[in-house]
Every structure is written in structure tokens, then in C-alpha cells.
Image 1: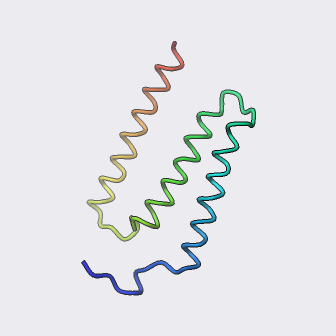
Image 2: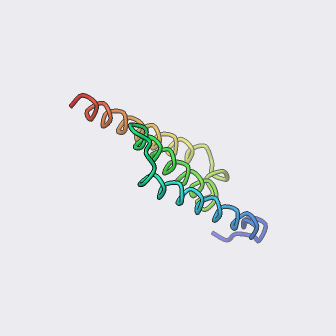
Length: 94
């Protein structure tokens, strides 16, 4: 599968994504010391989801895939949401 030069993201975009990932890494790292109470796990998952979305969207080029690939991407996200919901429901009832 050959790719033309136009398909490659620009250096400015890649540096912007790197900066965004570093900011999100710093935010995740700061969760260790900042008191957020019961919101800490939810914030950590939100930050991790944002980092994963950036990686999938830019580096895995999900925006250029066909509808079948999007079906599997959305199915995976839906399944992950089910797993998180069941895990948190179990955790909160103990």
C-alpha cells in the first residue's frame, strides 16, 4: 500500500499533536498529587480517552477509513463503555 506525500500529516500538525499529548501527560501526572476526591478515576479515564482519540485519529488515520472500519471502531468503543460501566457498577456497590 503506497502513500503519496499529500496523505502524510504536516510537521506542524505532528508537533501540535506531540504538544497536546505532552499536556495531557502532564495532566494525568498531576492527578497523583491534586485532590480531586471521587472524580480522580473519571478524570484519569477522560484524559486517557483523549490521548487515545488523538492517536487513533491522527496516527492510525481513522478519518480516512471506510465505513466498515468505522463500524469496528465504534463497536470497540461501545464494548469498552460497557466494560467500564460494569466495572464501576461493581466497584460502587462494594
